[in-house]
Length: 80
Length: 80
Image (cartoon, each protein chain N blue to C red):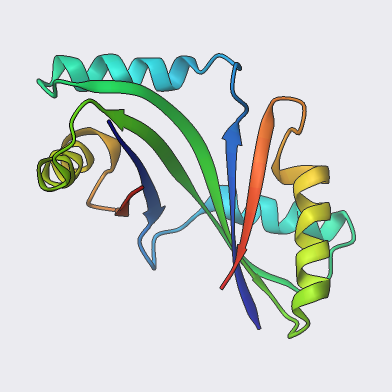
């Protein structure tokens, strides 16, 4: 079994209202010096295979088809 | 300036309906052998300081107060 973590983040230049709201909230809580905040998603998956090459190509296909919107999001795959 | 990534994931044993839905959708798309899927959040922050110790303690406080619900979520902090 292979465990993998997929991280999906907004591309640079794409507006992130959620990140902006967190930035504002952290300031309001008294945390000074917080610059840009961007929020993304993380997926922890278990794959029933021991073939890392196949796992990686499967994960890429999953990201392209479902997990990420590649118009506005980047993804990175980390296989444990 | 310090860049940090905070990853917030559900604790083991906490139900994750969103992860279950993704699991089902991946199966429906024809990806076989996908086991458990869990979804979490990731925050990329910039801190206007060069003091890594202070940055780390600030980030912990941010997680406890705002970024994570420590009753049901775990967080990990990675300073770049």
